[in-house]
Amino acid sequence: KQKTLEVKNLKKYFPVGKGKTLKAVDGVSFDIYQGETFGLVGESGCGKSTTGRTIMNLYDRTDGEVIYEGQSIYEMSTQDQFQLKRKLQMIFQDPYASLNPRSTVAEIIAEPMEIHQLFSSKRERMNRIYELLEEVGLNRDHANRYPHEFSGGQRQRIGIARALALEPKMIIADEPISALDVSVQAQVVNLLEQLQEEKGLTYLFIAHDLSMVQHISDRIGVMYLGHMVELTSSDQLYSRPMHPYTQALLSAIPIPDPDIEDEREQVIIEGEIPSPIDPPSGCVFRTRCPMAMDICAEKKPKWQEAEKDHQVACHLYNDEIANDSPIKKLQD
Ligand code: SF4
Ligand code: MG
Image 1 (cartoon, rainbow, N blue to C red):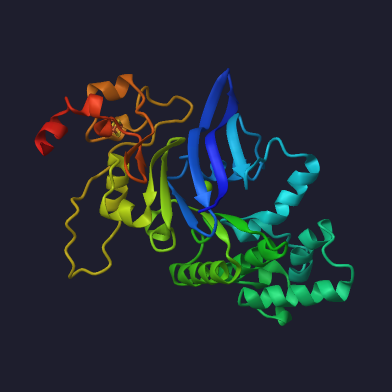
Image 2 (tube, rainbow, N blue to C red):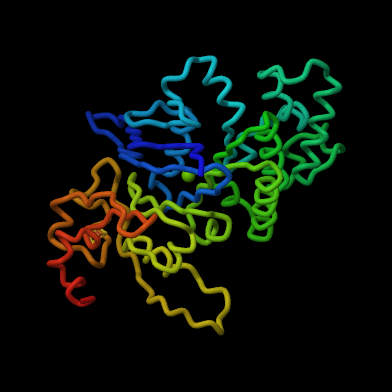
């Protein structure tokens, strides 16, 4: 399978004064394959949005690489970076904040087309706008209205139409359904899936809740405090979560059918997320980890493939260390 996006050891630090640094993203690596949906999940403040924005070059990276279709986005010429915007688009959690309230829907969707000089005649462009509105489940009567006249779900559809205006190959969706009513969430997810099928789109789908990405993602990466802690296929993540943080996140998902008893034990994650300005030594999860060992304070766990296509950063799965651990002994 072809890689659309490669993220290699990406870091994004923000200076926060007094010589301190907020390590929002601290060495994250993953690949996204053409046509797949990659879910990026974690609690708020874990760095998932910053990862998305740094990939979009909305933030300057601190270190690391982002490679789009084999080419480093940082080494591209300005012209190539401009062209990249046609292929790689973003949609946001709050479509209202990202839609100019004084522009009509048609003007909002037309803007990227104008910047990229896609159509020579106004009529052609207008026809394309009508087409896009229909593709996202709106209609041409909506074209001359203003964002405030629409519901949250409809606004997200406008945001999606604008993202599609340049016919991108990949979309980074930063919590696109988190702000919507539960009843509307499924509709927007269905729309995104339908568009993916029609257009062969590749998605990076960012969410704070595993239950939101469970069904749409082919693979999922779990982030905690600026680090990727686990990455595998959606199925594998749900059936065999390895990282204690993922296990805790999964146990927190309510079971929809009360007749079905879940075999998962409820794991409560205790304590607050530590500050990324002053993260714990060793493993960043250790202050909340029910399995923490002495080594976890001393040594940062390696990002390693514990099973085929299943990566995890946890000392429990590092043979040299875990052979001595009480859990390993229990399992044996
Ligand atoms: Fe828990 Fe240690 Fe694994 Fe971190 S490395 S998740 S503290 S067991
Ligand atoms: Mg966010």
